Image (tube, rainbow, N blue to C red):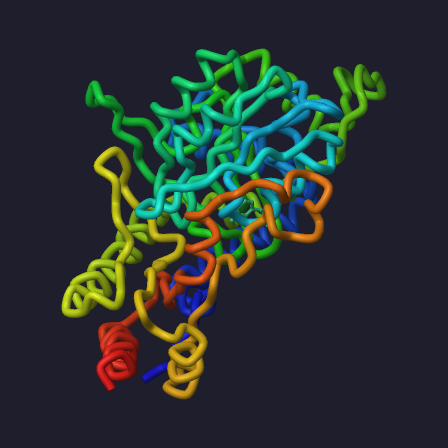
Amino acid sequence: MEPIQLVDLKNQYLKIKDEVDKAVIDVMDSCAFINGPEVKGFQKDLENYLDVKHVIPCANGTDALQIALMAAGVKAGDEVITPSFTYVATCEVVALLGAKPVFVDVYPDTFNINIEDLESKVTDKTKAIIPVHLYGQCANMEGVMEVANKHNLTVIEDTAQGIGADYTFKNGDTKKAGTIGHIGCTSFFPSKNLGCYGDGGAIFTNDDDLANELRMISNHGQSRRYYHDQVGVNSRLDSIQAAILRIKLKHLDEYNKARNEAASFYTETFSKTDKIVPPFVADFSTHVYHQYTVKLKGVDRAKLQDYLQEQGVPSNIYYPLPNHKQKAFEHNGTDAVLPVTEQLGTEVLSLPIHTELTNEQLNHITKSILDFINQ
Ligand SMILES: *Cc1c(COP(=O)(O)O)cnc(C)c1O
């Protein structure tokens, strides 16, 4: 059996190696390293895939979020509501702009933003909401949009973990994650569901004015060359990454299907024990399993992780310390009381999930877990 990894980028690469290598060499030959035709091509491909009017590629997912907040007009003193149970980047960019991240709790089953708690935390200073499609499943976007519309707030979806997921509205319409709010942000960090071979990110919107703002801010606030209407940033996706992403985008649905197959295997196996609660999938969303994250009930998590390590099974905790408890946000609302988030921090465990898991590996992982639990 091949060694098990949390994410297997090597075997995924080997399957598309010829095509990728050629595309990279072609960019080198062209020397169009910045804003070359591949970047424009990828932008169009992603617009088509997501069925969204504008994609603005940028340097990484954290930049995408920061640029989105700047385009939404978030300034020092404003408040931005985000879940605490997310990767630090979601909250970091809010604080970086001098605004205050206001942390809300999540639902214990989907791990996503709690709509009642969200509504209770809206104040006169609130400018935006950042729902996160954590682990690959959409947050309750109809709930989020209802609160946002009522209070005139900008919704910035953090879909770094949810690219490719479908959201189904009550009327039966479906949209891709990241295209429901005013702005969507994603990351192409190598381990993401659509990952490049370095850093990359993108911002999406259906709004022409916002698209202009986003483009301008990500390019030094430049309206035309050497004329700067506002203070912006320098955030670009390079042509080599774009060329790789064009190839990988063609495989994204198949990649997400492979992740779903591994997830189904896990979930079916764990139905044999009540000590492991498998991920719950809400009926309004598909799941693209950026992570396969279970909740442990009455299991010593540290001991289980040690045992799994001995069996050659890596596992990880996303995220051990919620953001409202992080030192970095000490002056920014650590007074928040978020019981579900705090409880989840002690219970969650993420198992290996990627596009290359074999049945042999899956059997070994599940057997190791059940052996430990039933010993
Ligand atoms: C990965 C990630 C980001 C940041 O993306 P980078 O490309 O690493 O900057 C933001 N939010 C979430 C939820 C993420 O998982």
